[in-house]
Amino acid sequence: MHALQALSKRDSDELTRVFTEMTELPAQAVDTKVQTFGFGAPMQFHSFGPSSALFDRAVNGDTLLLLALRHHDPQSAIALIKLGASGSLCNSEGESALQVTFDTMAFLRLHPDETQPSGQQQRDGASVGGGERLLKHRTEYEALFTLLQDELTALHEQQKATTERELQTLYQQFAPDRISKIPTQLEAFVFREQLLLQSVKQKYLS
Image 1 (spheres, rainbow, N blue to C red):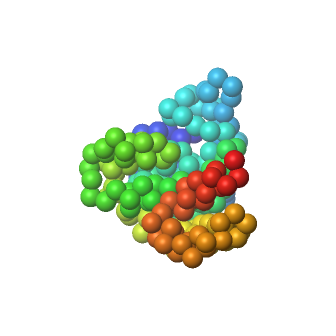
Image 2: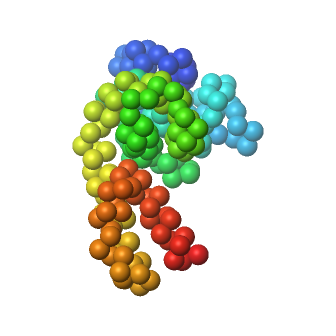
Image 3: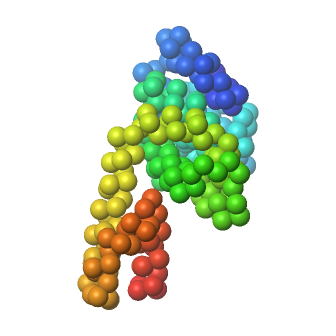
């Protein structure tokens, strides 16, 4: 409950204090998952008791790290990672903190230097919770990306490899002349490889 309150106040220092000074907490407390109910609130973290609706939105199975990212609080996310929070745990919708962080990084990399989103940027940012708030905290997010650089790079390489492999399969079956264009397509869709694959699947499989 103390951790939830600190997170809802975007107080990364207090969040760190909770997990470093409250020695009675279980070893894996930093990865505790939220449970939501049909009407959205209250929420309950395993073994920590109920809380009021401290957050605008939570998904069943969210970890503290996912909650921090969902509410555009990269400083708290950094604090949780340094405390040992896992980026690979998924909620009930299959979201992981590492994937959410990657999607955020992709948005900011595709829109460098801007401080206010255009209409297109707002649409691009919809999948990561709103471009304006991401741009507002760009500096803090860059620190988060640096902290997770190895994991984010590995995830991106995995996504590129998966996209290339599936494009090869699709083009071999439906458009062999396009196989040679795959490297150019991947370059044009950097950080959006999954969107490229989705559009190709829609073209040939729908």
